[in-house]
Length: 440
Image 1 (cartoon, rainbow, N blue to C red):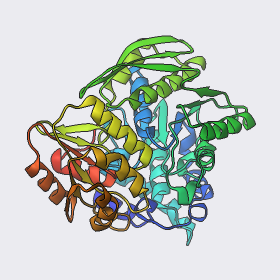
Image 2: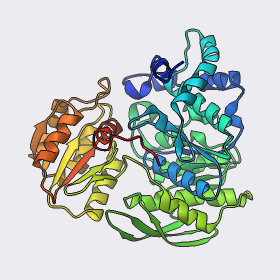
Image 3: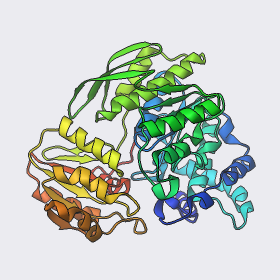
Image 4: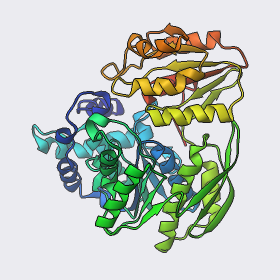
């Protein structure tokens, strides 16, 4: 199997990242991924792992944990989703993405097991998760960091037995699938919490926090809460760094720096440090210097990423109300600009009204667009129905390339072009602007 054939093979499986209107409870089945991993020799069980779920910040938190463990000298695998430019971004060990050759080779090896499933075929995400299991096993990683895809309880990653779990901030998202209340959504996300395994949580709304505490109580799991058991304090921020203090169970970490922008990165870093402190309590050697170096060296493309200056071009995958509010706050706080031009495209299953309500008021002009993922993308003309109440000068475009051309042509050197609303849109913009694979 060539890499091109491997990608064609992967894309032959149903991909719920690109679909809308499906039944979550009937479509997601842990039995399939358990069976597939078993047929492959249970590669998910061969390394220590950390499991991360949440509504926002789970990718950044995962990469912070990954970066700290790498700085401590461990061989670490990272599994995230979705990707921005290349499928290979989802699976990496150390500084390298999974290679094209290894992708093709491992899928070739997996194919006979997959073909035993008959009509109840695994999904794209299940096959790719199993691919990550096999790759990390083949590479002999010391730790694997798994970010959930959707939810947690029924997510394909949820067959792992983690050393520690982490829950990032929970907010309203995928309410047609995960539930209409924060308690229901938190119960789905908290489905990754395992018997007797500590859980580190970001600060949560009371409804979500109580749900997580209940799960931890039922499963005899220690619940470690940022804001209570670990505390954070912002010190400084600009368009290049965030500086903050964190105090945890093992002391105080002062003037930590990260290139990950936004006030929320102090919270994500506190969750990551909470995870590291649990690992240290288990006898794993990780120095304070490794923590400091790991946080400083962590990068995460497409999240408050500066892709250009004069004018600023900022890429961020905010796609729900809470993420959009955090993005708006971070832009106001960290960047100095004259006018903001918003390049915006979003999936039609999102709370479009809430997201535009957070971002449009701070914008001077709007350039509405859509990604190539046609089945999920909201039409720009439909988005305009949500933005017209703000009375902003609005351009409607057919695709991301056209939207970028329009935005950059009308931007002055002191302006800021913000591309957001969907990681699909951000990925296409990043490929156009930077044209590189997303190494971290």
